[in-house]
Image (cartoon, rainbow, N blue to C red):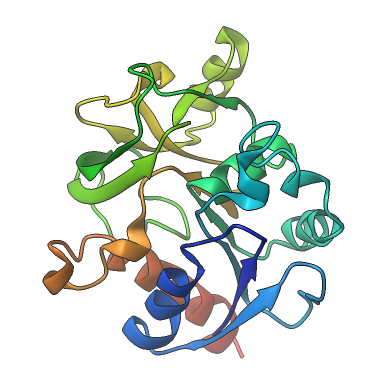
Length: 227
């Protein structure tokens, strides 16, 4: 399986994503600069956290206008798995690949610590290695992580089972305790907590590793076992 880790100016979790895919999972991975990237030929796309364009204007807003977003839309339509974490989630929201928006944390402070998440939907290509209702420990590191959507959108997310992760103890004020959502097609996941920072027990948790294992297992079932 071959992963593309998209790097924007201001990305700072790209090496963590690369490590999770390349070293922890043992698969191919490339760091691809957003202006030079050709996403054709990759089996999955990872959009890392950080502060793209310094979070000027709004977190993820400027990055969402870059040409590579057109490629992301094309790959999403093809069914290629796309994972956006933290600033990557913000970029997916700003580009319209996922519904909703991010607000400042309710306490108006940057927060960086482990949080317990509840796996709300394990019937996705990102979460099949988890149990439904499983509680996992994944770190957060954000200032604008307060997920918001209107009542109509929230009802639709619930109806379509698009809420993938929720906070056990909501740290930022996100509506319905939402920590991560997926698109209707089921191949674009955005989440604020950082699974790539929880892929080895030495990091205080390896609960995030199952997410990358799920991606690999589903890819093998789709492309290798069926070959």
